[in-house]
Image (cartoon, rainbow, N blue to C red; front, side, top):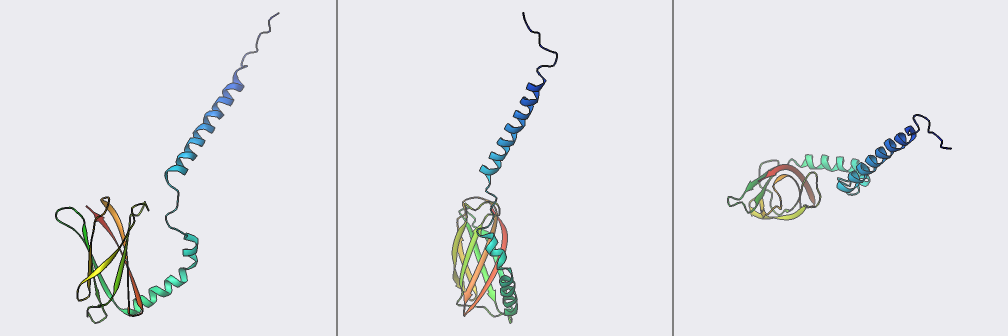
Length: 161
């Protein structure tokens, strides 16, 4: 004797198949999210957050110096790089010499192309360097000038051709 199946016997299989597709799509999306971008934009972000009051105090000390800093990022005409130049002046407009100026160049979204360079004195209160960047586009320039027991930081975002 043969047993006939009741109508709709395959409904549970459809239910399981739909949930299987949902689980497969979620697993694929989770894998893609984890493998394409780690989610970190700063190293030791928690420690940097704890040091926020110290950063505010350093900003107050920097403002009290009264220095003015002009940053220029000009492409070299033959396209082989850019010239980064900074001019430092004190409160009275006199050039500030004897600084060691370090620059950290980074792309806002990717950390793999970061560069560290040192600017050389090129005149009274002027410091410059030629840098070849691996990619065109948006770059962040963070400069730290140290000398005479003081430290001055500046920031500029620019587009490299």
